[in-house]
Length: 116
Image (cartoon, rainbow, N blue to C red):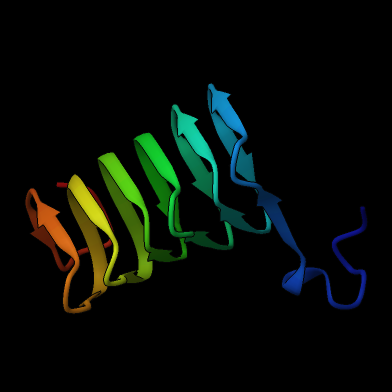
């Protein structure tokens, strides 16, 4: 796929519910996960973790929206949004952190997008 293709920055790869991956997931574009991943997730675009999603491992992306479960570490270069059904057991590194009412967070947070 050509990077110069019109609209390519808006393409989204989707991991549907009921799908489980054991290993590392890497993407140059945007990703939505509704399934389960045991391993690290590295996305150079935006990452959305839907209701019912689960990740056990490190998560890195430009902007991250979470409404599922993460156990590991989260690194967002820009904005991290923990929606109302998010359950997080992780250390968080993000420039901007938004926590909606109902979200559960256990761990440390840093307003730097780089790990210390």
